[in-house]
Image (cartoon, rainbow, N blue to C red; front, top):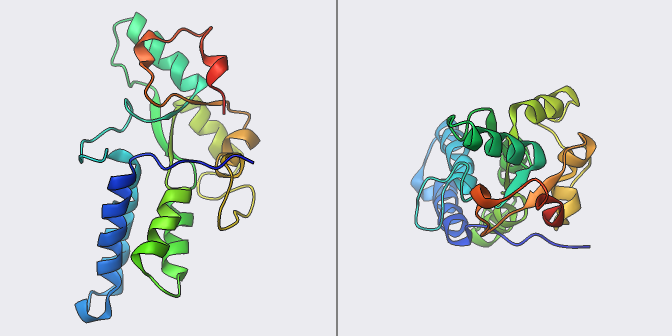
Length: 186
């Protein structure tokens, strides 16, 4: 069983430090403020590079086949490259948030482990996003995730929705062809 490696590790480390600070009792931060900031920080785990550069689409390591097709079609037809695309969390943020809130010890190490294991994004097409939602996986997983999930478990929402995901880290999406993508399936 293959494990995922964490994309934008330094970014996740910094976010884990920030979350740990939010939960320190001496900081006396109200619970509703913590939850509000936690929501935003969980978005940032997948939207930013290690240098803090915003990378909602290009630069993401995981793309669905439908998203690649849509991107290439947009490119060929001189449209906005990201029309019809969605940045999707492979494990819904609500699940990640719950795991962090439920931690007995909200230490940097425990928070980072959750972010490394579950904090991944997939660029999908609007149509694929709709398929995920129709299957009932908008905000839940089809399976219970173990503490150290495999790639197959983290991406199970896509498998259950019959969406193929490719690992394109460090690939130039603009130069891909539809004939290339089958070698990148996860």
